[in-house]
Image 1: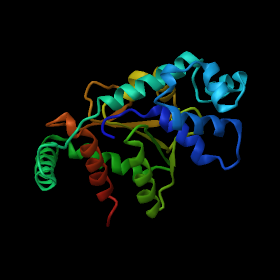
Image 2: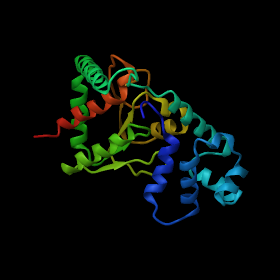
Image 3: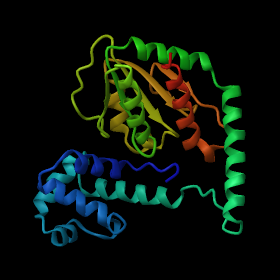
Length: 252
C-alpha cells in the first residue's frame, strides 16, 4: 500500500505477532483483521455476537488497543479504510506491463536524483554519527514505513548497535538513558494527524530525538531530516532510499 496510515492494523499485527497464547485479545484482533472492512457498519453488540466475546471484554480489549471507547476505535477503522481508497496507483491499465515498468523506473530515477540534489547530506552524516555514538537506538514508525524500522534494526545490529523498535502506540515505559537516541520515521505525517496522544508522548520523552520525514511542515523533534520531493506520489519509495543512504555510512 502506498501512503496509507495503517495504524489500526499496526496495533492488531503487533498483538498477533507478539502473543502465542490464545487470549481474548488475540481472538478479537484476529476478528478485527478479518472484518475491518465491515466494522464501520457494525455496533459493539454485533462484534460481540459474531466474535463470541462478551461486550464487556470487547470494550476492555479496545481500551488495550489504546482507544478510549468503541466510537474512537470505529473512527480509526474508518480513517484506515478511507486512506486505503485514496492510495496512489502507478499502473496505467491501458499500457503493457513492460511499458508500465519502464515509466515507473524512469520516474523513480528522476525523483531520486531530485532528492539527492536538494537534501542536506551533512544532516544525514550527523544523524549517522549520533547513531554510531549512541548507547541504544530506538526506532518509531507506523504505517508502511514501519517495515523500514525492521530493516534498520537488522542492519544496525550487524555493527553491534543496540536497536529497539518502539510499539506502534509509543505506549510502553521506555527507560531512556543519557546517550540513547530516538529516531521517528513519518512519510507524510498522517499518523500524527490522527493520533495526538502519540505526539504528546514523543515530545515528553526525555531523549535526543531525530525525525525523518517528507513533510516540511512537521515540527516534532529537536533534529529533523526533511526529504525534498519532486513528486509526492513517490514519497514512500524516496524515504526508503534515504534510509539506505543513511545505512551506507555504516560500511567501512
